[in-house]
Length: 228
Length: 228
Image (tube, rainbow over all chains, first blue to last red; front, side):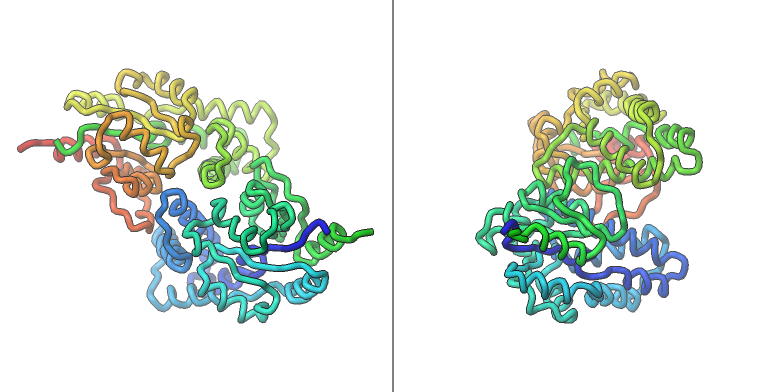
């Protein structure tokens, strides 16, 4: 068996962040999509700056800080109601429609599954439970336990420690190409869920597999693990 | 004397990256500004990912990688001539008009000056010499010598080591607010050259001073170091 376990990123990979765009557009007509995109970029930027500088702060707070900054930058008046509404949306993102069936079939093949996310444990537990996915995962691993965000090796190491497996026997799945690169650098096999048909980052990494949904992941794993 | 030395960031702080926009616009009419902005963001992103993952690569190469990615993303056909032209532009950025006078007056006040940049030494030497600024600086410090980019503490530490001073006796000057935050976290006093009137990053840091040019820096330092 090529892969003995699979580790999933959460946001964008299992959970659809599109609903944030929709709410942002409703709150700030004509500027919502820009706000949502800028917010996501700034959120990731802050995780990296804080990790490089050893200034960890939980993901929920980083998410809030980045929302406040982006509204200031775009000249949008963010009152407490709007802030609360946008943050709440982040806490209840829908999962992609194919998830449950794919996760079930992967488990049927004897694979161990986990999530490894930048989100703090409280955020992860709520969202995974709301999507009815809690039974599928051995554990929800959070960057919070090492106080460093991806792509710090200490964060990726949570996955090898959990399963007691070498990274090369674990498939790491993410919709974020930079996350795929970080995981590959760490030593994982990787699958890129490239839902938006983005070009590959120029970081010298080629994922082991890629496709436009978790259905493509299932096909990839089934083929790789087929003894025939 | 409050400040005994001043350390400057290079790109955007001492050197004007605007000329890259102009050339990009000439090569890709209607998309040049977007390319230049995206290129700069991707360049910084790659420095951070490579630093967090311990996958250092010199700044010149990171700059080239990010250019290639951005052209792919924006659907722009980047032939070798265009690539060479854009990269060459980066190597000969003009300095801001007030620089020479301000640097001279700071030196006259007995302050030691240095540059601390993500750029590799070859890039720095060429650009500083072309601007006629080489006589002002004790040294051109590069992230290359520790193979980690800002905001890694190891990079900022090059400045305290050079001058043999505590960080609190050194003023760190940058036009990049994230760089100001990283330097403040490290322990430097900081001045933000906020040329674009950007909002302050939501990172819990307030620079000791800020202004829209190096002339504002001179006024700030002169006042802080005035014994009267």
